[in-house]
Length: 103
Image (cartoon, one colour):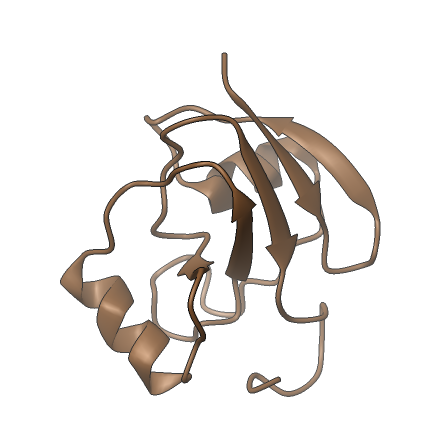
C-alpha cells in the first residue's frame, strides 16, 4: 500500500498509509496526524493545504481549483480534502493548526 511522509501542522513528522480510495485528509485523520481542516473537508476553507514535495496526486478538479485560486495558493499546493494519492508521497502542511487562513 502506498504511503505519505507528512510534515504535520504541529511540526511533527509522520508516515501515513494512503489509498486512492480516500483523500489525503481522511488518511491523515485515520492516522491521527495533525492537519488543519476548518470546514471538515468540504473544500470551502482551504485550510487543509499541503505542499507536494514529491509524488503524484489525482488531477485538480474545478471545486479544488476555485478554492486554491481564492486563497492564492502557490504551485505544488493542493487541498488534502480533495487530493487522492497516485504514488508514494512527501507532503508538508501549509498552515498551522490555528491562526490566519492566508499564510
